[in-house]
Each structure stands twice: as C-alpha cells, then as structure tokens.
Length: 314
Image (tube, rainbow, N blue to C red; front, side, top):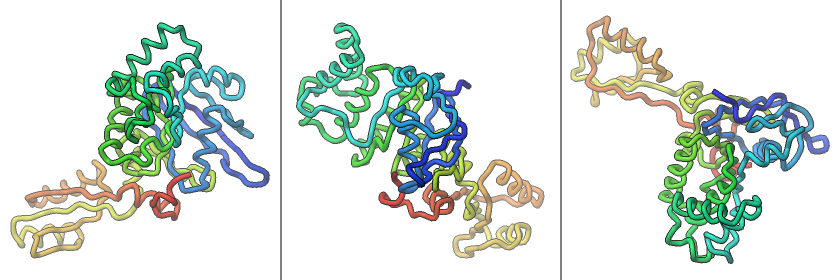
C-alpha cells in the first residue's frame, strides 16, 4: 500500500521546550490515522508541520509524495485542512463559500460552479446552498466547512477535531461522510477529543505524550495491551460451571447467573486457546461474550491523564 504520510525523526522545540522528540509515523494511503494525546503532547504542532504551516527542526517528512522541506507548494496542492474553528464566511451563502474557494484555487469559473454544485449535493446542502451560512445549524456548518476543504480535490485531509460541539446525530453524519471520503481513496489524518470517534473511524491510532509516540496500532491492538480484558462464559448448570472453573484456574464466578469471568486479551489466539481447553474436557457453554478495555482505559494507562475534554485535547 502506498504511503500518504511518512515521518522519520521529527523534532521540534520552542526555545528550550522540546515539543516533538523524534517521532516516526507511517500513514498508508486511503486510511484514517488518528493522533491522540493530552494537552501539550504536541499533536497540534505535528499537524502544523505536516501541513507546512511551520517548519521542523529535524526529520524527514513526506506528504502525498512531496517533501515538506523541499517542496512545500507540492504538499499544499495535495492537502486540505479543516480546523477546529470553521473557515466558513457566515455572510456568504453555502454556494458562494464554495465558489470562493474555487477562485482561491484559481479554477476556471465553469469549474468553480461544477465543483460547488457537486459538493452541495454530496454533503446534502442543496436546499441550503442559496441561504446565508449564518442560518446554518452547527452540523450544516461543519459539513460546509469540510466541503470547502474538498474543492481542491485533496489527496490528504487533516481534520482537527471535526465534530467538536456537534450533537450526536450530526456527529454520526459526519462520521459517515468521512468514511465515504476514505472509501473514495482520500487519506484522513484525524485529531479528536472524542475517543469513541477515533475508535469508530481510525484504521490506526498513535498516542503522543510528552513529545513521543508511546503506543501505536489498530484500536483493537491498543485495547489488548491494557489489563482488564476478560471473557464471560455462561453455563446451563452448576456442574458444568464447576468443572470449567477447575480447568480454567478458578476464575471469578457468579453462581446465581451461572457465569465465569476469565481473564483474556480477546485476541483470536487467546479465545482459541480458551475454547480448546473447554472442548478437550467436553464442556459446552450457553453463551460467550468478550469484554476488552476501551480507548479511555488505553489513554489513561498510557498517559496517566483522564479522557475528559480538557485533558485529551491539544
């Protein structure tokens, strides 16, 4: 798979304060990569460097095949950035905002009109296209903001907390839009204050703390690294439960519910080993459920910070 973003040895300091201390990142094209970390971890600095807004002190960085240091214009021509705060001009209509972006890209007038029309339809804003953006709801404004990012048909999009302040319905609608973009081949680099959002969208997640990557992997891989995962086994009678308990090392049991809670990382290998032990003893279960730590647990274990809004954003 092609690499959309490649980072090796990225370093950045402000005076004597080290913000990024030699981080490495690899983001395959056509995927969602989420960078998480507490306040001051360096997430925003990393995004600003990757999008050419500031320069790195050291490291090799390529975005969409262009070197950030030697070909920043090439990078800018291949990316889109949707920041935490909307870039929508509230005095203009939705269509006018999109056409203005086209003019900034120096597109021909006919092409500006074509892209504005297509994006209004793609983001379900046709009915609001002639109305001032000041009349839009929060969800509509964020959709228009993302649509404006797409006028230049970027290969890589940096989304900085794209659903902050949205209600759950609008948030889920935005998730669907992001999934559609990725399905079309766009690469998304996401920072978010909602760990559920990273869990839902990201193919891979990196956790940044004190300027270093302290963990990276798929959401499932990260969850399996944290103690507390278990399998809950349900039995039909006490005799089967007692036999299973002896075989499995006497895990926690609930005689009233006829359940055993067995420590397990939830991986395919871990589950197979557990079930093989039961099969060897000819023990059948009525039901089996896997419980793994969520990303909140992962975040706290890796950074020591709770995952409230103030602690998980920078």
